[in-house]
Image (cartoon, rainbow, N blue to C red; front, side, top):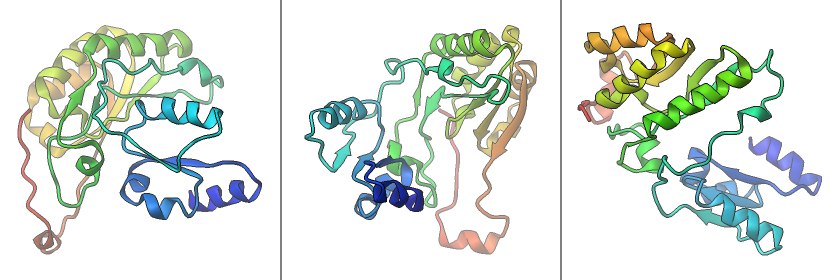
Amino acid sequence: AYTIADHFRSRGIPVVMGGNHITALPDEALEHADYVIAGEGEDVFPVFFEDFRQGKARRIYESSRSVDLATIPTPRFDLLCEKERYNKIPIQATRGCPHNCEFCSITAVYGHKFRVKPVERVIAEIELAKSIFGKPHISFVDENMLVNREYVKELLRLMIPLNVSWECYCDISVAEDEELLDLMHESGCYEIQVGLETVNPESLKDVSPWKYKRV
């Protein structure tokens, strides 16, 4: 990303960068970007764009709050115009993670508050994607989507009649909930991505032991 940023800056094109790595190391990022967005972007980007338009943009913008997922704009799926080629549609239902694993950056960026988007908003976004792409593959980009059992079971029950396929990231505790696994199957789940930091017990001695909890 820095190489690409350097290329565009060499052509006189302003570069703004954000994300987990940039949030953790904003001073490093400023060696390769004109502007840095630290933290969550929904509240900060409108301010940056207006400042940039007026020619008075600061070099660093930092989000000062946890964004309310109920108030963020609906994604512009219609901008993904190559319908046949781009059929994996990103949707976010939750944000953050209630765990605080020592090796993970999620809580450093999003804080310790696990947030959910209202179920009806998520369903509306899936229906919008269906109206554009027919039968899209939904890629939930949440860091740990299935950790709030009550919320996600309500969502999956409403997804069953929508006839879509979907994937997500989650932790390995999902294997302990038979009801959840059944709902995942019935609602069209075809893949989950589970992160295992290591399979070597010796490697875990240098990090805090991971313990999950229900939310």
